[in-house]
Structure formats: structure tokens, C-alpha cells
Length: 126
Image 1: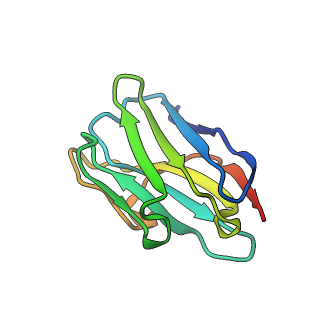
Image 2: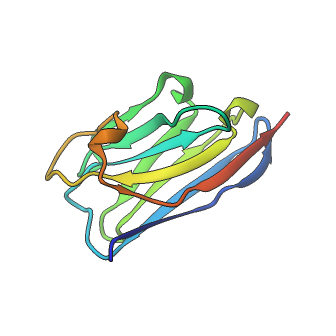
């Protein structure tokens, strides 16, 4: 059974940092693009960041550029999201996701992802 499990969420003050991790099990995603999305209360899910299968290409949403960094470890089958300079508007449930296509670049759209984690809550206080 394929699983993506996020960790690292929590409560932080504005300007602080958090590092989210996503551990995959059940299969290797070393050949697949992965990404992070988030959903705030009352809002639709939105794209945050994505990374190519090799880790060599990344793509961030405009709202997090310069503050968030996505990375991956294909040996450990993990993907991470380093979040710095957090703002109250970053408050959301953050989801890790993985595609099923081989050797692809980063993907921006949720419907391009097949596997999803359960999410981890990030709350930024002002």
C-alpha cells in the first residue's frame, strides 16, 4: 500500500520557520515528480512548490518565492519543504503529493498528482 506521511507542522510566530517532511512508503518515487499543496479554511487547495524527479528543477508559487524551498532525498524516498519568514496567511493544512509519470519535471496542478498524504497543520500567529 502506497502511503505519503507528512510531519513537521505546528504553531509558529510570524517570521519564524518550519520544516515539513514527507515520507513515502509502499513504492519508490525516485523517478517521479513530487510537490506540496496547501488548503486554508474556507479556501480551495492551492499549489505551493514542486520538484522534478531528480531534484534538479523546482517551481514555487509566487506567494512563497524567496521564502520556501522544496528538496528531496531519493535514497530516503522523502521530500521536504523548508519554510522561512512565515506569515499568518501561510496558515493551512499542507499536503505532500506524488505523480505517477516517469522522469518528469515539476508539476503545478493538483490533477497531475496521483498520490496524496493526509496533511499536516501549519498555524502562523501574528
